[in-house]
Length: 191
Image (tube, rainbow, N blue to C red; front, side, top):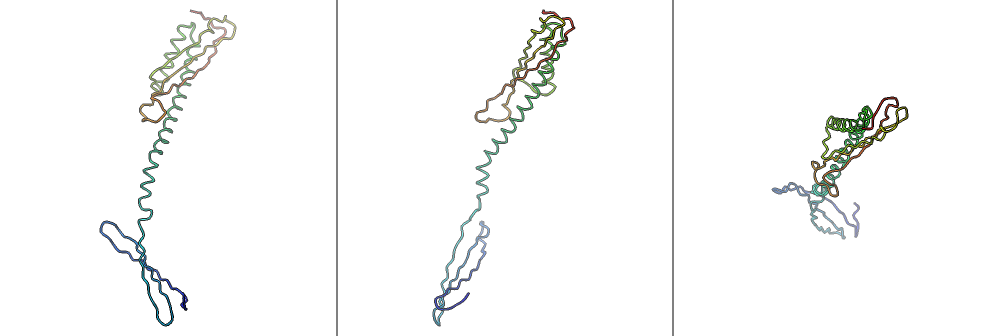
């Protein structure tokens, strides 16, 4: 802070003055002194600062909260569909196994449907529409030759409890199929 002819000297001071209902407001007082010859003049100015970034966090949260809720909802939907897919695959494998233990196509279909429903109930998956289809053409293969039974399980999973999301329907259909080998030397019929 050298003072010489034509040089300026600046001092800064902050005042905190309480205003009712507004908290503290910062004011900065800038004093500029000009040294001109033997006399010294003084100019005082006040600079008021606005609220700055106050309230910007609230605004950012208000803008980002809906997007964050959509992302969380999509993660929940994806998790629910993954759990449903695993349950349906397990039910299809169990249905194919139960169908392969039967001796005729009719009882094989009935056993596959019963086991698939039971497996999905055990895993607490409630399908709005459950379709169990069994390809029992392996029962027509003569004894002593390799044959198989194919079970296909189709489950419509409700998503209505997860809230409305754009582009996402009220339900999704999950499908799985499994194959089980028939015992080559066990007697079987085509009825």
